[in-house]
Length: 143
Image (cartoon, rainbow, N blue to C red; front, side, top):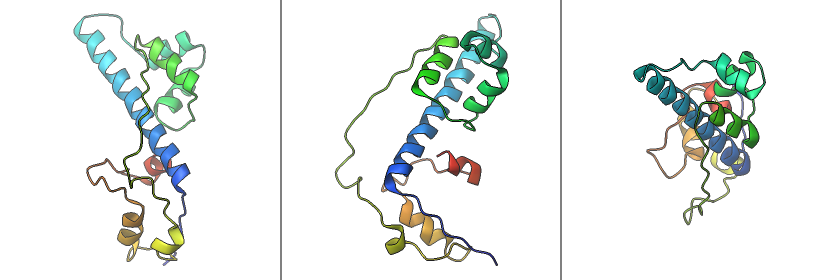
């Protein structure tokens, strides 16, 4: 059986988790706005209409909302503006003890296979066990 090792530092993980939350929030906002417009019998919200307002193609909007293309802070603002929403950003301190740097080699097995997958994942898990975890490899890449 093939095995491989995955290493991700805390900085990269923090950035990826934040962007996953941003993409999730954009998806929620688009879905909520679609539902609101449908309920109020307003013009339908489509990726094409968002793309036209933003000045790009529907394919780009599809990839960005789907989390398959990097988003800039500016594009986040543009997409939300296009649907009639505004972004809100709030920074807060990391709780004491949650900003510990994990040395993957010290906590994780040398290889990644079905026998030690659980140990590897738990070495990278945050103390908050209620936190949503990626459900696929693709989602994990953008998480």
